[in-house]
Length: 277
Ligand code: PXL
Image 1 (tube, rainbow, N blue to C red):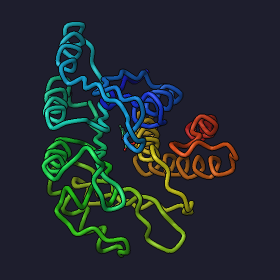
Image 2: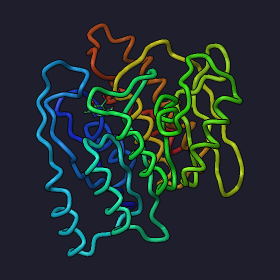
Image 3: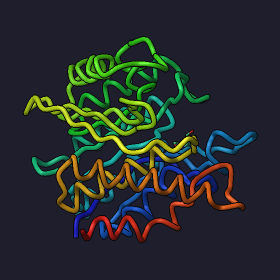
Image 4: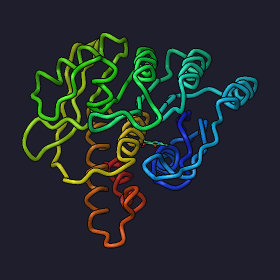
């Protein structure tokens, strides 16, 4: 069984970060080791959330794993709470990376043209330096703009995304994948660029007109999970994008849907089916 380490926060309630990554990756048949960067009462879209920062725990925990001789097939970072945690994540890449380890960075910090409340431009720069060390990065358009100092646009064409991909690629990752990319009316998906092969990747599915928190984490978890289960990147993007869109659709049908996250638990069996096909 493959073993992945995921480094992100625990939002106790909110269906995002570790409370999405752990169940999704486990259901996909991957041993999932968690390194929580902070414990929050909820994600940061709630008012009055509490936060207990765990920065001082990251080095001792990983040092213990090192002593135990633990290795990882992949390392996946999501929401990190501070500049120092970004630096520690780089140390963890250096300490645990082998030629076969896949480093997957989701530079979670912004959406819809804006940084999340906890972050500033300095943090965006540091995230760019974390992406530089990754095999695969999966920013949304807003995050890609902040990391490449590009003007954010609500309406754009393929050339605009190609330009973003070129700038992301120049940061250093092997594969850059921009998510939430709509290349025609009624469609959405992802567009990627592989620096080594020089190939572009495009996947578009039907757009569901609703924005939900935690769907980026759902896409990332399913995508790295499918790659670890031996799928090509294009296949993994298709599986993850379809799962995310189907989950939003299913959530919209639930009259008692929570406002703060999607019903990914209801659609997990479909993800497993897609993986077996
Ligand atoms: O889904 C991304 C995410 C993860 N963790 C926390 C967040 C967010 C987005 O706002 O607030 C704590």
